[in-house]
Length: 307
Image: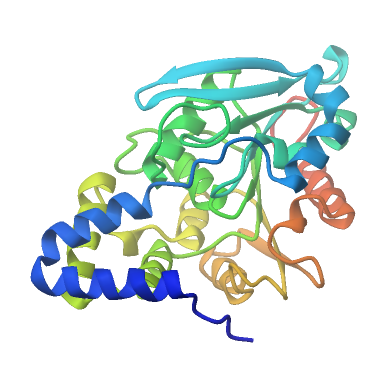
């Protein structure tokens, strides 16, 4: 079903179309600022508030830190398994407009499997500093949080957290270093950032010249063109096992993106398809939590390395 275009969206498209025809360079650069500026929300959404209430005892046990990195300070939340049972540390990485809270349904199952857990609010989200989030900025924040907590053995990511995490683990430009991991779980992840950029440009009505200016700005900030940021290609480079979980009914990131990731992964990734969950509820679905924790536990030995 095609969603009806609102009056506000029509006005935005008209504004960008006119501005792009007159001044494509500044329009493309402004579009990039819009593209990398998550909406700042005061307080929690109703769904987040319900989760916060349900997870209150768990959140009260978290070790909370603000970790400095070259992009500001990122908020992290850590939980520790029994010392005699610890087999590594798993990072939980939320998506665009999310926060660490939305990933907390994974914490207790991971603790029971013997893993320490660290979650973070990406820049511009939750209690972290900043008003912007780009792929490299998110990857540097994740690397900083991982290092501050002693390294991570695996990651569970949602949506935009997928590209953030695989870039952090791949470590190429503009990062200069890689975050070691043994296994990755990607929930509802996009594949190509060029596709994400094209979808954004179409939505706001960017013309060809303004779109080119937007893409040049991405290249300037990321040290690579958007077309070079492909999750499946990064997984192939990383060379570690990955589980891609995606719902057939995902309206935000179509299921075909998961198929693309697996096809490009060089055999490192396998796909678990779900139905009736959608894009956001995938992070709390019991079958997803069970599959993700089992995948990590089965592939990471008691010393934190692959068995």
